[in-house]
Structures are given as C-alpha cells and as structure tokens.
Image (cartoon, rainbow, N blue to C red; front, side, top):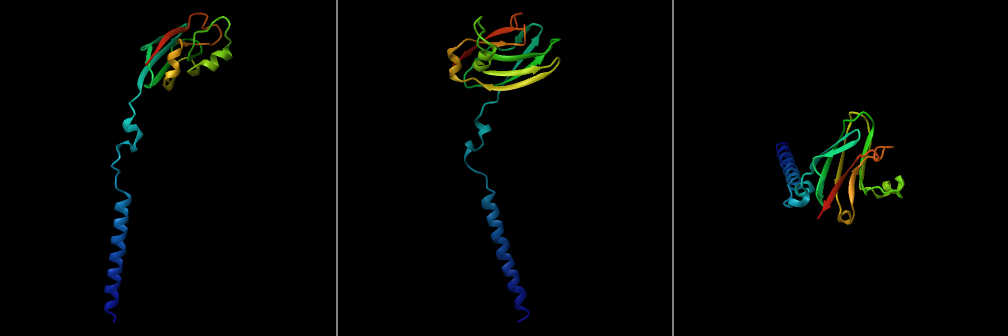
Length: 153
C-alpha cells in the first residue's frame, strides 16, 4: 500500500501540470485579427516644422489634408514669447475670445528657445473656412505674424 501512494501523487501532479499548461497556451495564444492593434492600421503622423521668429511664421508645409495625422513641431527662434494657432484670419470686428473659440488648435506660451509639439487631424468641417497659422500675443498678429494655410479633402 505504501508503494502505490507515491505513484498516485505523481499521476495527480502530472494531470494538474498538464491542465495548467493547456490553460496557459489557450489564454496566451495570439489573435488572428490584424485590426486588434489600432496602430497597425493607423498611418504614421506627418511631421511639420513651424518656426516662429520676431515677427514671422515659417512652415515646411502649408497645405494639409483632412483625415491625415500631423505632428507639428513648433520652435520659437525669436527673442520674445510666442504662440501658434490655426485659426480663421482675424478681422477688425473679431475679439480674441472669438478667435479662441474658432481655432482648430493652439500651442500656447512658447518661451524663447522652446519647442512644443501638437498632434492634430484635420476634420472635414475645416474645408469650409479660411485658415492661417497665427500668433496672437499682443501686437504680434498686427506686426505680420501670420501665414495662410489650406485644408484639402
């Protein structure tokens, strides 16, 4: 009777280990669905460098396509603080609050020598307006710190 007990324990241990191995394999198997990983289907963002100086905006791209992800790298090479927004052109009747409400995006408070980034995807609703890169720090827009941009389908 004493010799059978270790054999039963070994068999039970084998059954338990086999069951655990089967369970781990079933739970850890990779999925066959290629869309389960959203980054696998999303295009990589296009990098756009925007340089701010006193009192000018330069960009390596000024036409943007709806639905394409963009990664804006905004560099302040001026001697004063700047901001960058894509907003409608300011008219004499517009207030800064109206510009803030209408903007597509903003990179605020860019200190001298600082770089900020903004990730943005243009929506189809942007096709119906005129847009520009602009800095609305006091006096900067009036000094010419704006650059027209185009949004296309």
